[in-house]
Amino acid sequence: MNDPEKNRPGKVKILVTRQFPRVGTDILSGQGFSLTCWPEERPMTYEELSENIKGHQALLCTLTDRIDKLFIRSNPQLEIISQFAVGYDNIDIDAASAAGIPVGFTPDVMSEATADIAFGLMIATARKMFYLHKTILKGEWGYFKPRGNLGMELRGKILGIFGMGRIGMKMAQRCRAAYDMEVIYHNRSRNEEADTLLDAQWVEFPELLERSDVVSVHSVLSDETRGIFDLEAFCRMKPSAPFINTARGPIHNEPDLLAALKAEEIWGAGLDVTDPEPMDRNHPLLSMENVSVLPHIGSGTREARDNMSRLAAENIAAFYKTGTLPHIVNPGVLA
Ligand code: GLV
Image 1 (cartoon, rainbow, N blue to C red):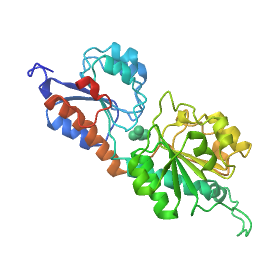
Image 2: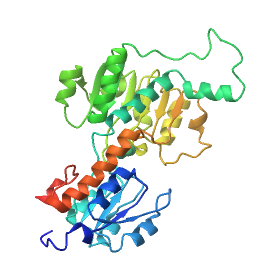
Image 3: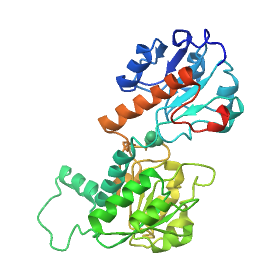
Image 4: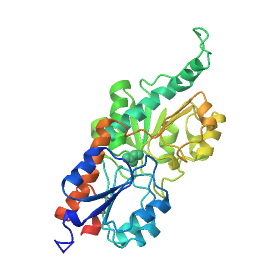
């Protein structure tokens, strides 16, 4: 970063791995950066990504790109990785930090959109909406059934948030405002804003499972959280409680989730994330009455995606202009 000539935008080549909203790439090309954009709708394979990154100093990528230790070590020319997403579990952050590479991400701007999907999945699951919609398509509407198609009400119930960050807060706010739900949460540390604004209560993980009427996952995927929702965890939940996950699929163990639903250890599941993605179209979860699955659309609003694109571009532009990133995962590398 010390050679101003070397770091002029015109000298910086950026590999853009997906077709992101134009607002971000327009910012970068408008500032004179040289962009190589992957033209296809599908993500690159690891091999294609490893081939295409050659000669590029900056990488604008997203959660479908595996940026592992080998990739980072094989690309000593790489100066910055800018992720179009709030989650960054696809990137080996330790390896990037060891190589002195700052990693940018796009927090906040997609919190409302993702909380809407969590809130929507909670209601859809509680009222079996996806399943009942499918019965109409199959010609099974029949007639109004006074004792049929019954779901559960949410007013006054206990919401258990796993991971009380920005998105967890937005979900909790929605549930409090709409249904006056009591909020409990488990997090590595207490969230004072949640305690004060939402009268939320921090609890240990087993207590979260045992007391919640709805469990909603909003944590990062890490070594600590991978598979934490396993059969043992589901068996601790109330049999009347739905499980909602809009964070990352591998936080739940999917065969265990299926087993818990079949054994009626939990009431239902609302998933915007699965493991793997995409979910097999014949997966048994897709035909269960109390299960609602969406294809990872949490941040999928025009507003959120435009803002994510803008933030991801601004992280690169700011790095080459000032040496810092407004939204950085590993600030220690710039110290
Ligand atoms: C989407 O899943 C994101 O991490 O932004």
